Image 1 (cartoon, rainbow, N blue to C red):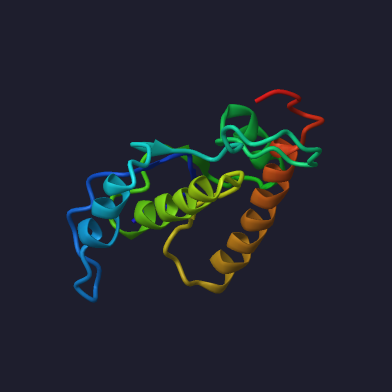
Image 2 (image 1 turned 120 degrees about the horizontal axis):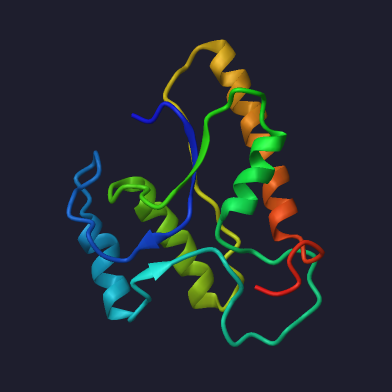
Amino acid sequence: MRNYYSVETQAHRDGYLMSDIKGRSGYEDGEKLWRELDLPLVLRAGPSEGRASEKKNLSPRPPDEDFLAAWKTFCPSETDARISTDAGRYLCEFILYTSLALAYQAGEDRNVTFFHVPASCLDEDIETGKEVAVALIKALVTSWSEQQHSAF
């Protein structure tokens, strides 16, 4: 279990060999279908490809060092917040890829983020987690703001 907060940057199409707690196969329920649909090997947050440009307030993009710096400024002091490239091929990355793939297939912007939290259930840790989640939302808005990034 992670003892820090992290935001995932990408999700992979392949490698879901485990089953969930109900015995559902990650391969059968995801990877096999995604391969048949010829979806990309890796998906990240970002604008849709080939979609007509329209005026938007936010432009989704994968978390980067600028995002991380912004997130940390909004977090309570001493928060261990990180960017991750490995959500794990069990449910977390499966869920992230599923969400990104749905937006990708619909031709919509992939404005999807996956947030990992420490496993503690202590009241003080839950309160900190709430503050870190609000900080994450603020950092996403800052990072995805077109005024901050005029080009992707």
